[in-house]
Length: 91
Image (cartoon, rainbow, N blue to C red; front, top):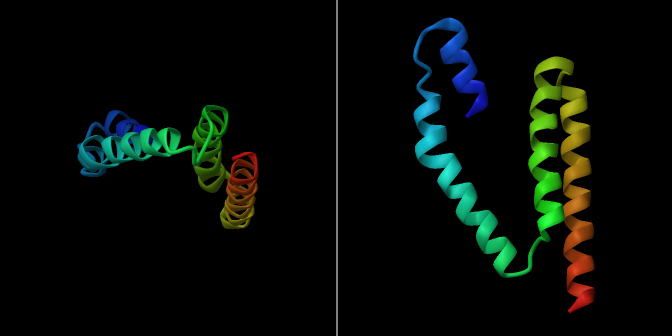
């Protein structure tokens, strides 16, 4: 959403992705995050970290290119796997 809002402001022209982000992506991701927290799939700490990591990954792709993006994505998947196994062992 920030990307499309920024584009709309900077170019003073409407970005259609802004409506999709506001009406679809944000509500769906909020629901997914709430359910994941309720069902114990992720901790609040991990969810917060992933929120910032996602922003950093997007910024990295825009600024630094595909190789770093793939590296960060694989790192994220490894973290998800680690957290999943850690939570399963704790229960």
